[in-house]
Image 1 (cartoon, helix red, strand yellow):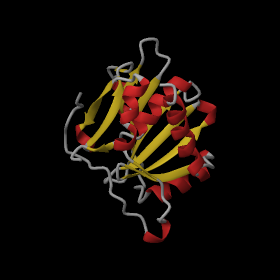
Image 2 (spheres, rainbow, N blue to C red; image 1 turned 120 degrees about the vertical axis):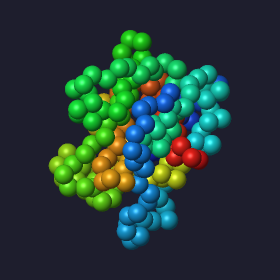
Image 3 (cartoon, rainbow, N blue to C red; image 1 turned 180 degrees about the vertical axis):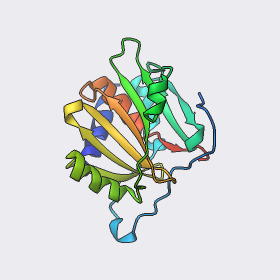
Length: 199
């Protein structure tokens, strides 16, 4: 539902009033919008980094873009977050990246979810999450022309952004805790900064 995105952007806008490359390999591109036309509508929300970037300076936020070479994706990450070394177990479980702030209060994780049955579209993935994970409210939108699925998981206090990869897997970005307003603001910038490396 659109209120998830509205909530995220409201946090960004309200807060603004007062004032590294990863390992490359056989590259997998994030899948383009290839869902059935009848599932897309003219009112699908669209968000662009160029609209939010001017707020960074007003909020006093500093960071830099990181590139996930294997997936051809860039994402803006605040300086407060530092990427941690992944364990063998993390890698086996599909984790691509894990970052925390100095006190480990803020968490940012990226995981590649691979299933035997390939995911054909984010609409299919949305239905799977609803049926098997109980995610009743989610929204499919465009972020810098990438089609993404976004939702909250209240019991885990996290915000999630999923993209479908061309091999039928899901690339999942997770931010927690979303109840921390300062981090929610950073989450808003990060989740809306995702873009194709070639853009």
